[in-house]
Length: 231
Image (tube, rainbow, N blue to C red; front, top):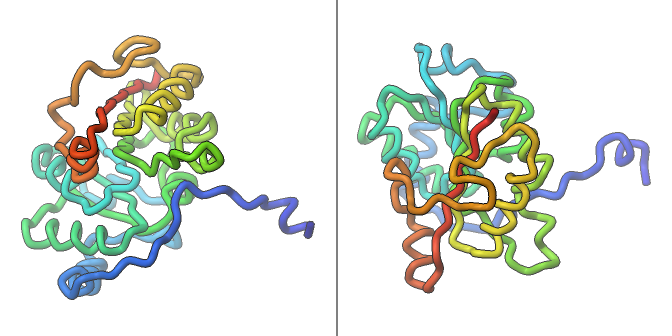
């Protein structure tokens, strides 16, 4: 093992960049609108106040997929700022097309690793909410180490949230829901808003039904929502 590998161990990532064909519309949207709405880790730390030209509660969504639920939430809450993170370029292209054509000015996005974004770009104590909806469940036991929700992730989110801020997670895989509940109930500095050992009784009204949720319902999956508040 080299000294470089000792000092900077390789982090197991929670996603795999799969080849995905972009439509012409998605390509054009990425080319035409990235400058207006896109952000890069290379830019370093950001200030939501400077980015959106106002003081407002800021929500960060990890893995927004095709972006419809993120845009719908931004439209429904124009008084809030939203930052999305997604590595799937067709989804980024689709999301940018919507925010541009529907003139949604309270959304910005990254197309990079969410953990790098959180570590390098988001100030501690600056977020009012972090959303993680239907992340890759890595359902095979040998792949559980790839799940984004773990003790280290919980404390990273805790640092980035304001006092009273929330982490809202949803999944349609029961085993992952149980994993989320176990990790977060044990995480220092958080309170389960549904009570220790419990999931929310129903989908919160502010969370739109997502494409992945509909797919899960077709497959006969249940859906579990969890919201944890920073103490």
